[in-house]
Image 1: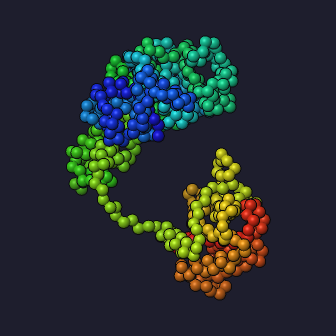
Image 2: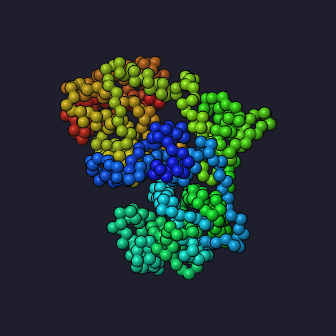
Image 3: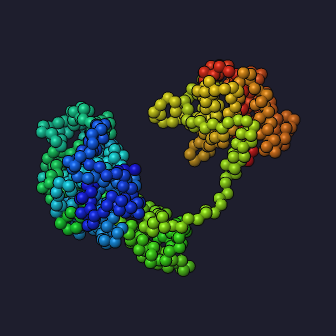
Length: 592
């Protein structure tokens, strides 16, 4: 989860109260966040450089590192954190955010070119008027952008934020996509003009920006935003222009977010403007911007409307396990920035109309509302009780019974990776490539290329890595394999398999055969003559992973459910196993 670093003294000033470390730690716990540590800027620098110097009184301001939930974007800066804690403590009312009442003809406009659909098709914008910055507020403003870029923006691949001094530029603005050779401007913190393709080469040595170049580097066109005088505002998602850079003297801030995901762009824009509209001349008011697309359709951003959700009281109390009166639930929701109005349905069921503000994009379902009630009530205050017995799934229950039977037969259970290499389910098992295997896209290592289609490679690898273990070695595994299946909506199906392996001075074929009989007996299945569909029998098989003439397939109610035999010497050599082995594998779901 993301960690927010805030100055202790400034945080306490914003909260209007001072705390000891233990008191603030307790407050954080009650609110559902975690105070990770108290440190200083110099201490963090020493830690990054792996220095062992002692802390001194000259280390500067104490900084609190606070861990917040990954979906609480409103807590990624001091402003949002302080506001949430003050509302939680009953010190402030829930703020009402509003869009300035401006006619469309008077709004600033962003015109979108049709070429942008080839690379980053969406843009949303807003203006913060009459902002008052000091150094701490300015740093928090920049830091929130970085936090959002790393979090919901997915390292700028989904959304990129640009902030500009509106007094240095002039609308209407245009969002275009042009060949890199046609884009020239002075980027932020530089003094000379760069062509966009030159800029790509220049930033390949920049530790911060080089990791974003791949997003547009190989595209024939680059996204770019101009004002009416063709001054470049930004080259998203790489860098802003130096001309419109914001400073401590900036009073009016133009914010633009280009994106490949419009929903996330709206969340990002709403987070930026709601957190810092507190510093506007008209508190909590944001000026809208009209965005016009090539098809003539226009939209006004930001959308700060409140989303209403109907949540039954019985649903809330049922989830948290505590019976609470209506007025207490409404009060608890208010502490979490959610307004709740009681209503009664036709069947006399008590419901709440919960108003979700634009800062709470994490509230998507009634269960999120119930979670907020539980947090505000206090998890430690919820009485402990024994949960109602849950009936296990038949497959899980059956798996546990089979594990017990095999363990009592002297075998040790192992757990192996569900991912393996392509070779481990093909050439290393002396067979051709398995066409039923699910392949991992963009695998980072050759060891994990596919999802296993059988349990044999894992058990053989276990023996190969434990050659010095005393013999005989008797191991088993009960686990899932995954096979391609076009009839399923996800294109694949899980099957629960059982596998056991014996490795010793001799092959142990008779021991594995005996284990098969024991498993069948434990499932209440009797041995029958070949062709009989009422029980099980064995037949000769020709699997390349086993020694010819020393293997058999298991047929249950007319269907083949598994194979056992002596492992082929070629296979043993592939897994670096010097001793003979016998192996059995069968599909457990066939019994259900």
